[in-house]
Length: 138
Image (cartoon, rainbow, N blue to C red; front, side, top):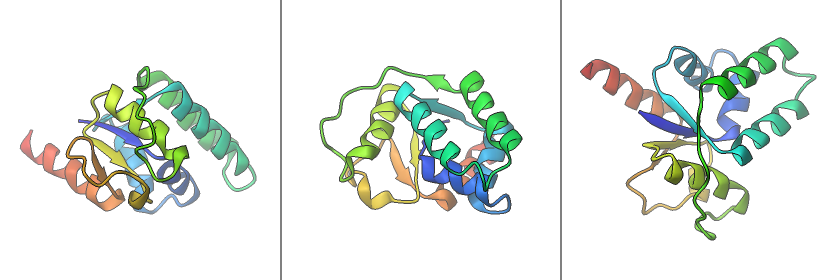
């Protein structure tokens, strides 16, 4: 299973180690899904996470960014030309399409197109359920 994770989910997981977003980070660490990124997605991860340097221990954020850089599926984005309400979210959709991701996981689903079946635009809870479903089938 492949997924693109919006920066807001990663940030929430780093800031609150007990929530669903943190569980998604743990599932990535455990190899339960393949994270798909483009250069623009990774750059946003780095930039946004570093804004919160005072709230996130450096070893925690650096370890996650290194893991993502090493293990994520890196893609050349496919231009989508304004399909997202928020142009800043376009990079996530472009990476998902290029990487044939099954899911985009975000805390702001309203900004993504609603007419997509693949990738599915899901929240944190929906993605955790999808992981459980796939793991239950294996």
